[in-house]
Every structure is written in structure tokens, then in C-alpha cells.
Length: 154
Image 1: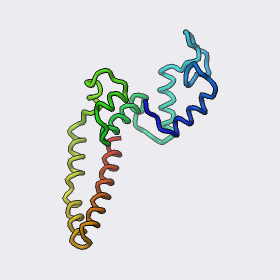
Image 2: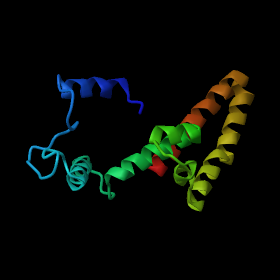
Image 3: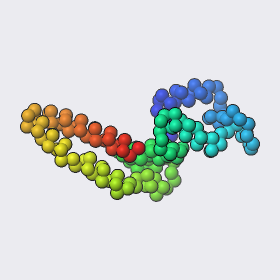
Image 4: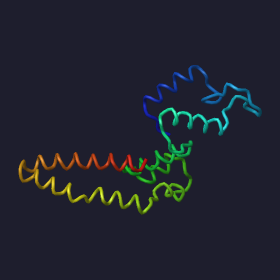
């Protein structure tokens, strides 16, 4: 799985000289073959605590983080077969669930991409300042639209 360089460096510091065992061992001794492994429930609790500390009031759980990354990568243009490999899905059918959107999301995206006011603004800039300025304005508007869509989908 690809990791950002910054995260890789932090993980190397965290792991230190260890070569085996859990990545994030539990401080509490549990039962079973690996007694210091965090439970699924504890990981969920940590995610909720971090979300609460960040002021996030929406229900947050570990799989939601995975889902959010997957849908954002698709929205930013990642090929679905690349996403399949990224997520480790054996079947593309499983990955396609991340590509499904609601009618409301499609309507918001359509509206954002076909905003008549934006078209009028770019046309006015083209008349007053020329093609280069209009192209620059269109790129800024497209970037703003993409940021707005990303924040709405989150």
C-alpha cells in the first residue's frame, strides 16, 4: 500500500529496531496468541476520541476513513482498477461500491460544473482582459468547484 513519505518516516521512528509484532501494541495484556494486540473495539474508540477532539460531530469509525479515502481518490481521477489494487480487493465488484453515488451528489456535481454564473463571469473576463485571463479565471473556478465538491462529499 502506498504511504506518504511523511507517514513512512514517522512509522520508522515508531517501529525503531523492532522487526516483528504488532505495529501499535496495546499497553494492556489481553488473551490469545498475541496478548498485546489492540482489539477492533479499541481502534474504533481511538478513532472516535480523535474525531471528538477535532470537533467532528458526525459518526466516525475506522471503515469510514477507508471509504472517504477511496471515494476521494476516485473523485480526483484515480482509475478504478488502481483503486482496487490500492484497497486490496480481489474483485472489482467490491471496489465499485465506492464509485456509487446518490442522485443528490450527482445533482450537486452537475450544478457545480454547469453554473451559468461562472460561464458568464469567464465570458466577461474574456471580453475585457482576453483569452489568457479568461483561461486563468476558468482554472481558478474549476479548482474552487473541485474543493467545494470535495468538502460536500466528505
